[in-house]
Structure formats: C-alpha cells, structure tokens
Length: 417
Image (tube, rainbow, N blue to C red; front, side, top):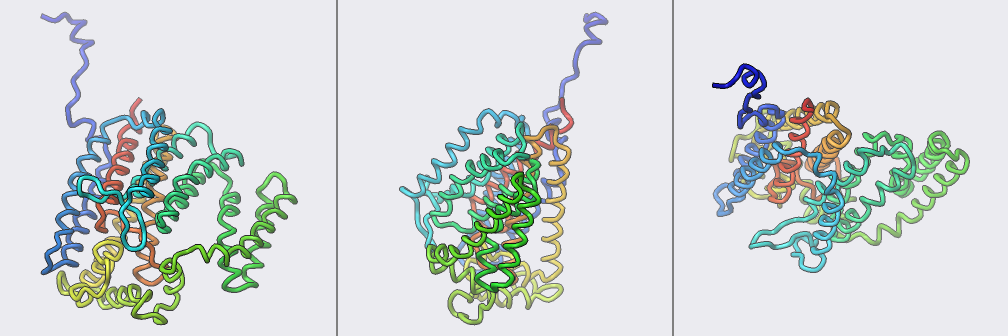
C-alpha cells in the first residue's frame, strides 16, 4: 500500500484532451465554418461541371484542421531558436521557383511536387511572420536601427516574390511588416514616412496640388518624429519629391496586365471585354443578389460562368449573388469575429513572441480580406490575393490553418507557467 505522503505528492494525470480544451474554440470553429462555407460556394461555381475543386478544398481543409490541432499542442517558443533556419528555407523556396517553377496566368509562382502545384510565396508569408516575431520579441522597434534591421530582413523574400511577379502577395508582406513594427512599439510617424513615397508618386501623378500638400505634410511629420528635426524634414521632402519623379519610371517596370489591374478599377467600362471584364461582371453578380440572394446554384452570372477564376480570387461574387446581402454580411461578421479573437490572443499572450505571432497573422487576414472583397465590389484594383479560408487554393488554405495552429498554441499557453 502507498504511504500517506505518497498519496499526497502523487500528481494527477492530465487527460489526453486537456491541451485542446485550453484552445480558443471560437476562433477555430469560425475558421472551419468559413472553410465549409467556401466549399459550398466553390461547388456552386462548378455546378454541372466535371471539376471537383470543392472536394479538394474540403479535403485540404480537413488536413489543415489536423495540422492546426497538432501544432496547437506544442510550445511555440521553440520556433525562436529556429528563426534563421526558417528564414533561409523560405528564401531558398522562393529562389527555387525562379529555376524550376511552373508558369500560369503570366507569372511563375508554383513548384510541382508529386503532381501537386505548391506556391512557396504563400508559406513565405508565414515564414516572414515567424522570423520577424523572433527578431522583435526581445528588442522592440522603438529605435530607427531596429526598424531598418526589420526592413532589411523582410526585403529579401519581398523582392523574390515581386520578381515572380506576384504584386498582390508582395503587398501582403508590406502589411505584415508595418503591422508587426507598430505592435513592436515603432513610432507611427516613422511608419507613415516609410509609406509616404508611394503615396507621393500616386498623388503627384493624379493631382499635383494634392501631391505637393502631402509632401509638405510629410516634412512636418519628419520634423516632429525624427531625432534630427530639420535634417529629417528636408530629407523626407526630397525623398518624396524624388519618388514622385521616379513613379513614371517604376510604372514602366510593371507588366501590362498589372498596369490594367491598377488603372481599370477606376473606370472598367473603358475596356469591358478586356481588363475591365472581371470587375464589371463581379459588380453585376453581387448587385443582382439583392437582400437574400438568388438561391444556391441559381445565380445567373455564377451558373453562366461569366466571371473568370470565380472559385479562387472572385469567390465572394458567388456568395453575394446566390446568398445576397445577408450571406455576404455573415461572411464579414465571421471575419470580424476572427480578427477580434486574434487581437485578444495578441493582447493576452504570455510573451512578446506569441503576441507578435498573433499580430502577424491578424495583419495577413485583415489585409487580404479588405483587398479581396474591395476588388470584387469595385473599390480596388484586381490583385491575385485569395479570400482566407473561402477561396480555392491548396497552398493558401494550408498556410492559413498552419498559422491558425500557431495562434492556437499562443492562446493555449497564455496562462501556463
């Protein structure tokens, strides 16, 4: 028989399910719900056709869910010691695309592995989040050298993605970097100054007085936020003026289809059968949905296959047409709740590394959702950015679930010692 002391010191065994009970189940269920909802919408886009993208979407979603549950069990802090290995592997995968990649739709973004096309740029977003979180977690970005170091780190994968060319994903890298720098205590004025040259180039090209006013404003921001007030103000104004002049030169480096995407959303009717076709048909589809939608498999634009790539980048048009304003609002509500849960996890994380991981994922979801839905309703140019968990895309869907697993690991360990 055991002694009394043995009985008192014996620790109770933890249940096998105990680690998962501490997860953020609201976040997980919302993500799984969007995945299933996406499968229904994808099925509608290929109704009475031989494609089975909806089935692949659901299978990959199931695999992603298993990965999420597995990753959530482990301590995410071990990734700190592997940050440079992850960073090198990320860049090597992007370099490999340049030599053995598969081309489609005017870009070389995929690597064929065992008959499946893998898109390294999707996984590169997660690699960048992990690397930046590890770099910023012990030395915050409250100094200019720290900010410059962060920009130098992310510049390599960003440049490799941009040369594929993949303008949409390269913009996601920018959103991730700016969001994580802000969370790591970077001066908001510095972030505004970093983005200002692009704004100057656009404004000066569209309306010169507005561009000049913006340049003067950036001079004041530099004077207020930089340690070298007058030197910083003059330098900021010179850089913004130079960027306005260089805007025309950089415009020449873009592919023709990229130029069309950036311009035609303002007036898609000027090329209704070319670059503006996607936007016109998308607006027609969403507008025809009304309050309650035309009904599943009943959308005229969706079932008539008037919208190219509807199962991927334009999946929101099928939801808007067949499920109406109510269905679209439910999707937006689900994304809002996901972002709310990610913000709560970032705020309550036990360390800076976990908090930054959650913020990086949050920035990715927010930016992709705004840009994707914005382009489908005519508020932005067409970009190759999928709608998280809803659009068909095996690499993108797996990346979202792996990222979700990391965030769930942060949530699970927030109250542990």
